[in-house]
Image 1 (tube, rainbow, N blue to C red):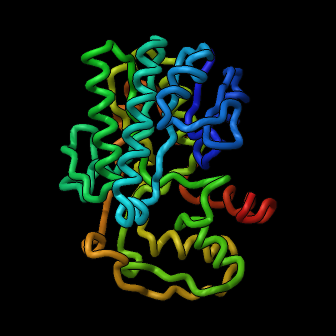
Image 2 (cartoon, rainbow, N blue to C red):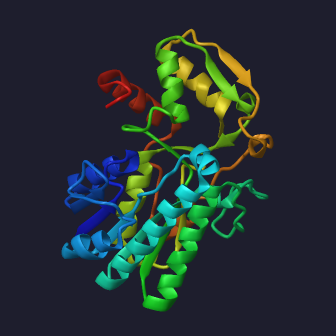
Length: 299
């Protein structure tokens, strides 16, 4: 099977392209730089011209601006990039008759009213980034109804792992712990989520590509384990043998004053796809830590 991956030079993209290639998939990566096909997904001419010259059976759409702080500071840019790119990619997939796998986010659920969060939980997005993901999902549904687009939507909790951005919580905490520097905890580390090693996401994509029962469905991507940000920092300190101290900080924004506590039900993925967790929380952290020790934060 030939798979086109957008955002191939990013954190998740680098992991996914390697994962699929190692399992016999023919992968074509596209990004603004450092990919097989270089170009801007906002450019309709590039997407429906140069990208369309390539044949593929499935398209995994990862490309997006994902930093929540950026979406608050510059919502116009984030919504323009995330939504215009998605429209162009959906048109490409529809024209090719390819399966579209959309990388969405648990952020569409916002602060959930029920735990664990099932796929039936109503959307409660809060930030412009959250809305960009929710609106991308609505665009997928629209293209399915109007143009017969085949699709699967994956809503991931907090992914981490090799090639992650230095600004992510996991990488910032690892970097600080290795240097025995203080670790600031915004909102006193009360927020809690499912920290998911990226290989679990890669496995979910693999299962979706291999199973026609996945089409037209939404799946949560996670391990089903709830971990506070404070627990994350404490675990990293223990794994590194660090002398770092935790320093409580106020919330970064008024939106974050109410702690976000969210973790998924993964029963649908288990029942439909036969999904099981590949790497758990501590095992994933240990592997990421060893990767950082070998490659440094800028690898």
